[in-house]
Length: 454
Image (cartoon, rainbow, N blue to C red):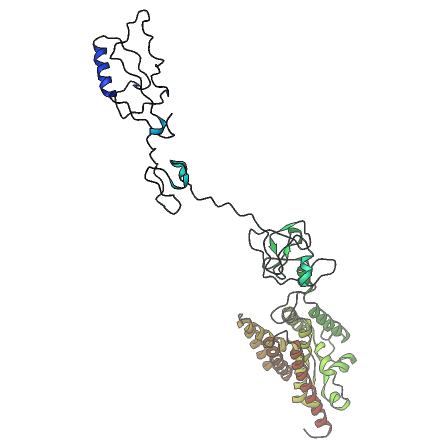
């Protein structure tokens, strides 16, 4: 037998013998069946195929000598192929392998390999393939390495009540593809982290937020505080509630006045006399409450309808933007400012009433807020211009009351629009200073009237 992957050399004279066999066949001489060595081809380079290891063994294809009907084999018959001894076998040819000499052993002069390794393709040892590394649990970036236990969250971040872990300090959602477990439900997988505290949360604990998701604790804390507007207003369950109350008070006061203008009576009743802006009553009796109550009284149906319509349109919007507290402060301060200027300019002979002093203040505040929000202010400017034209055109209108309300509205509008709402104390202090200045001016006017100096 030959070594694996080798071919024995053909016996000497095999080609000559084949030609002789061909001539004998043409002459009609019977031949023996070809053995494995001839294989029907005279090409010395062809593969003779496997041969018998015993020298001189007859081919099974040959006829036995002296058989009936067949002549004896002539001396020119093909000789059986002689097997090659294993010791003298030709070294196998090496297949083409990579030229990378960094991992191939050098071959010896006789075709073998160093180190006693077998020759041939089996001697080439490719690099060992890299096995995939086992997946490891992700390491949380917000604290200690993540383990399947919710108690790990309370060890370094402060335990919460009920064993729910402490507040984390993560940076947002967990990286995609990483698996961890919910801090509230350790048996559930979580691929998302709370956007605020950074703790991993499962789908049952996810609370939708403007960006990402929040855990139940952070989501509940967010719902407790209602969103605010730019100027401090909040979403209320009953929008415009304060405005509606003010309108209702004006209509009740109008009924208590005896519905002037509807009955045709020109004389004012006692209720109107007791709460109107009357200069000598303020100067002599120090009835400074009239600076406020006069804003809820009206002299005719047209007067109250126009004022309440303007109060509803402007008041509901200002209440939503500023909030109820600032809105009330704006209403009363503008009303006091308009009546105070009217008292200062007209003296003890003045008698007036109406909510227009506060409404003109709403005009000014509305304009400043629209400018601050970069909105179109053409409409409000047109409305203010029309009302000022009416004020100075028709008689019987308190001109100084309208101007006073407009001026105080500008002051408070500047205060509420350019002082941040988080500094509510500063806004309240500014409002109190304006009120104190108006009351001080009214008191000084009363002292001047009662002392005979003007």
